[in-house]
Length: 396
Image (cartoon, rainbow, N blue to C red; front, side, top):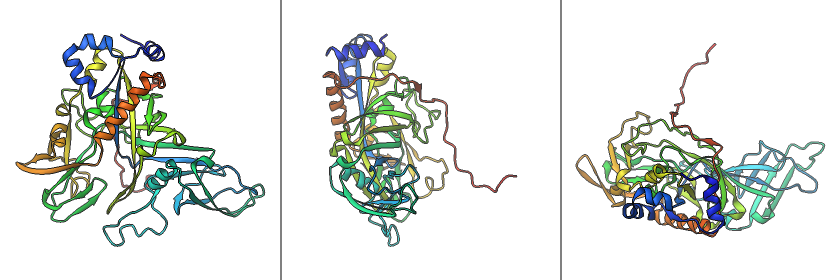
């Protein structure tokens, strides 16, 4: 048994043994679980891909004279102003003003909130336009100016739902092409798409939420961030296989970090034809090896993780709960899967190579003593299920 303090002491002294979730698999197989658990201090996990439930809080500081922004746009992308005078929240999926969306389907969705966030991190100069109704202490009614991230007092990424523990494999059983947040799905099951790093993914390496919780330190696009809450739609009580791995979406994380410390390589605006805009973001989570059981679950292999195949032409939009079967991540990463005896090409919206790079970068920071672990002050719930929105009449 180890404690967080003991592991952090080893990190601070430069003696910590750190491996990525990819490296640890073969190491434990050769060394043995008990011996490896005594030796290894931290396993790093990571993922990189579109995470729609992301956004940022920006503080512009006060102009002369002052303004209480009641409406604001950054590069013509609407920001939420229902905060203090010059604080705004910008969501990753917000469209640019006058974007035709799907008026002429499929829409291209060339620029939106995710692109603004990526441009901010890249240090680009952006336009702010804001309106106000005017007050005695905030008399200015309109402002137009240009800024970079260095001009902001704070630029904080605040992502309500990242790092889905598992997710659907999307397929299309209809006779027409579908354009979805899972990419283009050809008619008649001619292709399928998935989105996960599999055996590198954080919550798949901590399937029972033994180490990742509220307050955990994370690496968010290059910045040192943290888990600030369970993610929205967190549903830890779903079905699991014999390796304790959820067979559906299950857990999520709410993450936050300082955008001024982030790298443009791991913050990317995403345009999903026919669906909308999003943000591609990279996250790494260190797992402290507190005992052999924690390490055993960090040795999960792609062939032991299965994802549900879901028809996005009917079952997904109508929330039937039906799945066409389950397929392992080993099969998914081979580039083809079997669906009812038919070989179907499959692609990924996430990048395993980026995830592996993140896991390696995080491991290097821990080895150098630049990244310490935080013990969660609240664990993620393991017995919750996601509630649907019920359409009903008003009750008396």
